[in-house]
Length: 194
Image (tube, rainbow, N blue to C red):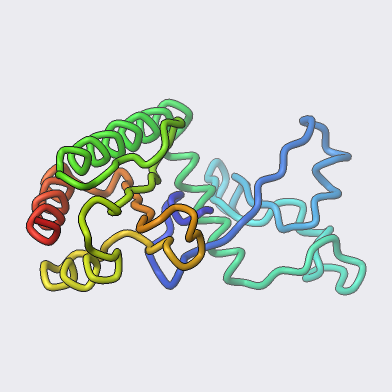
């Protein structure tokens, strides 16, 4: 869930939870996790990102600490905090709009291919959508194997976990995908299924 907040892609990436509460210190100090924020450094007037409210952590007071997380979590937390601070609310809005446009463009390009239903559902979607291949006469496994020959990882095969969806796959589009990437995917899928 924080992979899209500046984390590098790696074996599933960083994981985190999101906690919302009123903006009062008494609630913040009860969070069962490490807290990261902007804090002064040893240089007057200079600020950096790091642990805040460190005195409440297991690092400071061992077994009485409010949280029990490792250093990898700290690195992910700081990276996500820096990314969010640099992007700001307008930047996050822009990324959301770009992802929405690109994912809808991808679904539309795939829907132009005979035998595909893309997206498979009429409901709103953001970033991820299901494509149904029932009309192609090919399984998702066959399609994905052939897509690998084009250097493309196909969608997540849903046919075993969700047999009621038929021959379907979950596709994901992010701000990192270029229009050319999406067009390459659509052209490769078209070549594979026709």
